[in-house]
Image (tube, rainbow, N blue to C red):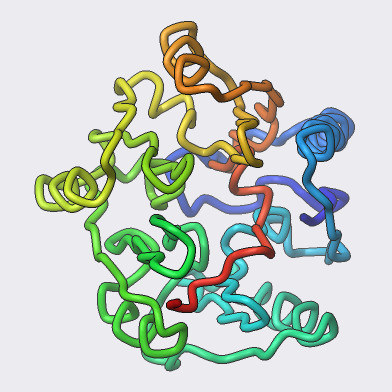
Length: 268
């Protein structure tokens, strides 16, 4: 995670951003600390990278790249406004003992924001999205670098511009999915891959309910309507709410503010 000392909205690269509307910096820090506290209470250990002036979206570490054991594949950002983050992300991972392997310069891919593993350990599939922030042409290169099979899905609604706003794996059999965010073929791919799906209604998807962090049987969500809470609790999950509405102004919520470091895509 990256503390939001320099977080603000300086530009508009998704439909949620409006450069004339600025988050409250004190409230953003308070909400970030609240999210960290919820993650730690759920059993997560937190590593922090240093914030960098003039890189306000560095807080959204989910987009830094893809983690695979001790391998790190940095993002190739679509928008110039975010491309300055990559050097800091790669330096952090190299300094912490990761091998940094690069996607080809010709492709665009925005890390774990558009690539989420699903399945059982040793048999994980990497679900990866394309259209708004990543290119389908990045997927073969990502599969070759990580050794993981990639299932490509096309996003369909610009408001849900990353996969992690549409799809949230819960364990090796279950996931939340927002059909609003996927095209017809993408919905079929997810339905074929995930044995048990919790389907989000459109208002739940647009409240970023899929942008939640799962730690064991605990789910930390930006908000949770009663219908959704009852369904998750019936599956045995404990739901905690971490309000992050200051970050919603930039189009990010709980999962966008984190990057899991314990992902291992290697096949058994």
